[in-house]
Image 1 (spheres, rainbow, N blue to C red):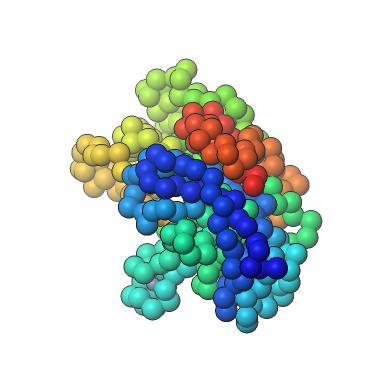
Image 2: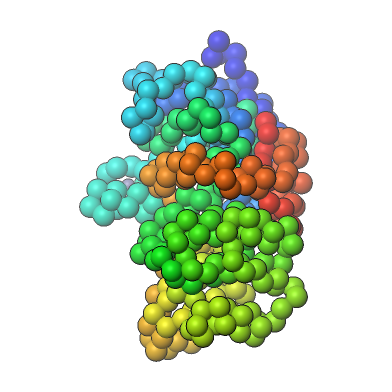
Length: 362
Ligand SMILES: [Zn+2]
Ligand SMILES: [Zn+2]
C-alpha cells in the first residue's frame, strides 16, 4: 500500500515559484507516522516564506499548520505525545517542529522553541510534513495529539499556529491577570486568539484594533469589550479611548498581532506604567523602527518577544478548542477553504487583511 501512495503537494521551488508536485510517501520509519491531511492552515508566515524572506532548504512543501487522520503508524508508535492510545483513523493536530532534546535550550533551559538544532522544513526528496499536501510524514520528536471525539477538526485548525503562539507568548509575559486591561493590535488569527485568551483569563476590558469590519465583528464574538476601527480613528483617538476605559492609565498588557512594524510605536503608547508589551505578529523582519528607549525605563515597561510555540502549547490549544468550541465561534473563523492549486489566491487573501482564517483543503 505504502509504496504506491502518491502525495499531491504545494512545493515552493524557490522564492515566488509555487507548483503542485506529485511526491511519493514511503512507509513511516520507526517513531514517525503518516497522516492524511484534512486541513492545512495558511499562516501569514507562509506568505513571507513564499517571498523568500527566510533561508529555506528549497524545494520544500509549504504549510506548518495541520490536522489530519492517521494513515499508518511507524514502528513503536502506540500513543500520542500526551499518552493517549493511538490507531489508524484517529485525527491528530501537530506541532511542526521537532526539537533535538540535546542542546542547551532543550536540556538546561527546557525551552524547546529556542532549540538550536530543531527539525523544521525538510527538502522534498525526503518525507516531509508540509501540510499543503495530501499526506504528511511526521518525524520522531514532532509532538502530535489525538483530537478528542466530538471536537470538530475545524475548531482545531481555526487558530492554526496562532493560538499555540499566543499561549506561549502569554506564558513568557507572565500571564494575563484577572481584571487587567488588555489591548490587542490586529484581529487576524493571532489577535483573535489573544482576545479569546484575555477574556478567558478574566480581563476587565479587552480592546481590539483592526481595519477590517469582519475581523472586528469576530473580535467581539471572541470577547472584545471594545473595538477600534483603524481606518476610522486616529492614533490619538485610540489612545484616548483605551485610557478612558482603563481609569486613565492605559493597557496593562498590549498584545501585537499585526505583522506591521508601524504598530510598534502605537503599542508602546497604549501601555500603562508597569505594562507588558507582547510582540507576536512581528516575526518577519521589516527593517528598523526607531523609538526612545527611555520610555521603557521611565514607565517600567516590559517588552516580550515570542517565536514559534512548543508541543505543550499545541496540546493546550487543542484542549481550549475542545472545551470552548460550542460557546465560541471557532468554526466561523474559517472564512475561506482553498484547493492545492489555489495557494497563490490563499496568500492574497491572507495578505489582504480581510479574511478570517484561510485553510487548504487538499
Ligand atoms: Zn504560522
Ligand atoms: Zn535542542
